[in-house]
Length: 85
Image 1 (spheres, rainbow, N blue to C red):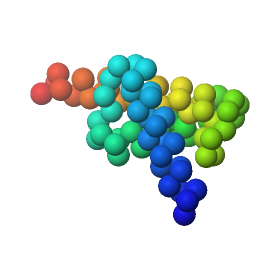
Image 2 (cartoon, rainbow, N blue to C red):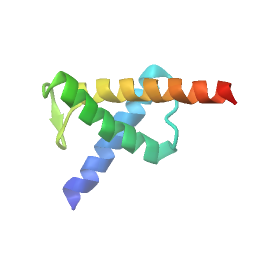
Image 3 (tube, rainbow, N blue to C red):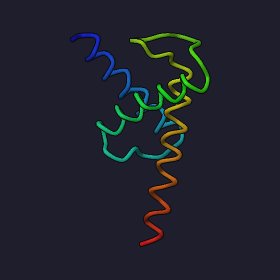
Image 4 (cartoon, rainbow, N blue to C red):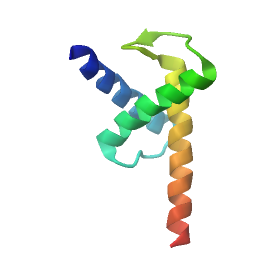
């Protein structure tokens, strides 16, 4: 149970940090940060592999790069949806 809580906390921090780095807010607030961090970690590890520091089953560098890419893509899609309406 504690490892699951750490997983959520580290996912949220990674999602928040990725949003700060690229200067865009994650839709959904805290829940969005957690989802962006966890999904970004999965994407980053799938593309870049497992290297660097490991914290709570997250490899920090691939997870952060994956979260940055995910937030960028989601923000571009959200912006284009706003323009379409």
